[in-house]
Image (cartoon, rainbow over all chains, first blue to last red; front, side, top):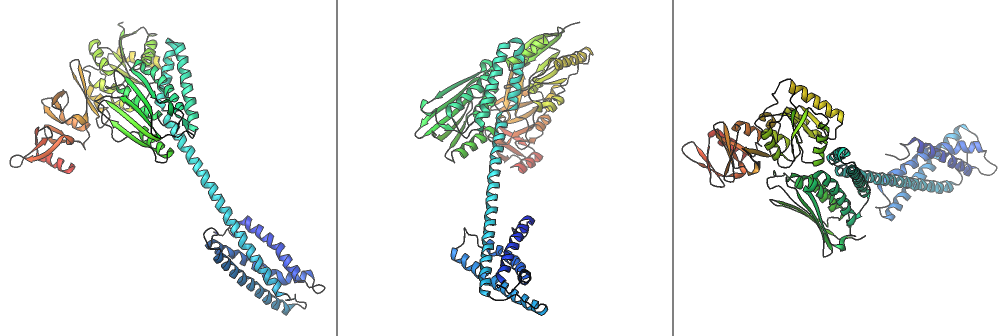
Length: 348
Length: 245
């Protein structure tokens, strides 16, 4: 697609620019005292208009020889050859036109100074080459901008999907139902739960938008989540955290552990009549951190086909964030379920 | 008029609390039992023979549908759940109503009115255990058994084979036999056909427990399971096995 020919606005601009150039060319043709301006214009304009369109052909060698990927000598040689040829063509046209005019007019514009016209033609063609290169670059910049925008939109999209997955609607409905029931029997607990829920939502929204957070922040979010679920599950649900102080400030992708803990609650503890304890462990392991989420589970649970959504998400997020330096391991025993993540310890 | 005997089943204390609170405003309903899981529910229902059951669906071990399937006599049932995706199954299980948590007083009063009308009309057919089983998730993930007061739930992957016995079936799992009041054909339709094969008029075998098939007599074969059990294989049963293996 030619960047000027296919764009009306650009073509108009191009022709306006050329009308100025064509006038200067005409002025060049005036020899002092000999020619009137109108005759000079009549003598040079038609071949110049044709030349203006010929210069648009510069697009084809420009497209074939992108500056970034071509040898500079080759580029120069090609464009120079084209410039000489097209400029020569222009001179020829002028000659032919003068001959045609000579048949009708008495005063013919002088064909004097062909070298001046030739040099000018070469320069004008090279100018056109430069303009075309410029247009190619503009197009490239636009494409890069568009791609960057697309990437941003995709990232935003992923984030939104993540948040949607995070804010499990059943979790919300169940919590709202708890609030609704506590309003009658224990208004102060209802108020506490409302605050907990608001706190959790605020934290997960803020944290979900961040690139990375500290492990402490992630653990805080887990505590809020468990505090809410404890109101529903009562004493059936316990959380135990065993965290090395030295890893608290390490950076992790937001909501890395949250889906694992949510799994542990809904599929593990939630399926046990007598309930149980979710254990979250974080230990330093050389220059990595070992993160473990562990829960008891029903030995009679139906066998799962494949890994759950929460697990797959957590694995993908860890892989993306740590550039494949993260490892995940799932131990699915009769009465215990354990997910362990080994990730590099990054502090800033 | 006699009060309407009511049982409330939900594993979450706050969810039970709101049902009790709202039921408290309608003195014609008398709550005779409050259950925190499916086991308690099956026992309490057998003991109290209530008229109406407010039943949560998502519960540990035994879900709401499995509770209904284990009952000898079905009371009227209103499902109470935060999940809207069970509505169709609730309808198949012939539930009287389906309450989505959280709900308003008005909606609850409406449900109670409907329950009362239905109970006073004298129509006591609230569906059968079969209706609740056919409302179960297909293919079946686990099977609940009840022997008097004892309830046992077995995940289907632990079943080795199932044998027809008169009007019931014996389900064999790791050397134990559990009785279920179902026909073999009914179970066959509920189980995953890619894993459970009807190898004989009277037998269904779990492919994972199958060790090999041996010729037995002229024109007949026998399936040998991992634990050594030998099960007759009919000619059409062998055809079915061959297409799957």
